[in-house]
Image 1 (cartoon, rainbow, N blue to C red):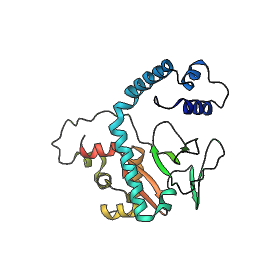
Image 2: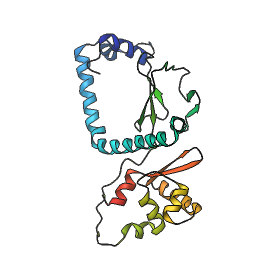
Image 3: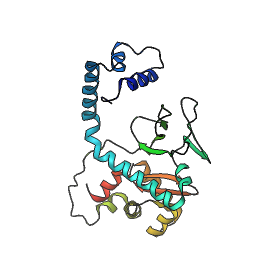
Image 4: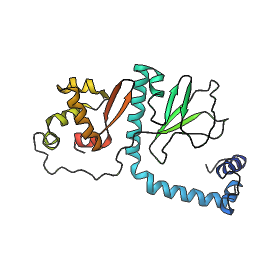
Length: 235
């Protein structure tokens, strides 16, 4: 951002405040004045170091698993399956992807493709770039997982199966096999129990933040969260 041209700074700051007058400091940023850009750079680096850096590894893991899940669904069921499962605020009605948005606007791809960018930082509905000349991008919120968590240091690692003692054998078995996404039916088969029993156990695990669940067509799919992975692997 600090190397952005003055022309683009002016245009984007003007778009940001709707042309109502941004105030002296932001006017200086829009004009590309070095002192204002320096202050902005310092503030952004400090914010990133304090708020983002401690969670980079966890963010990368969560986002990576989400992208891997999208890729798997694309290969298994096609792009329509992915566009139909981006969350309750999006609706795929071929050939149009409808998104609940603060303003009414149309984005035409014109053969350029659409980059899907998952995030869990700061947005509650999908957003796209304001500049129609840029590569079309849709940033959308992923399933939120508990992000602040204490480190776990089990005091007794000699127990034969602490996870089963904690959760019960069936619920522990459900959690263990969810290192890849599985439907309720597949989970029932893998754990030798009924789909109704699996549904009860996954509901408890989901409320505890140990798994995430989403719908794909007629199937309900489940996957372990970062917290669930740590509980299973004892980290």
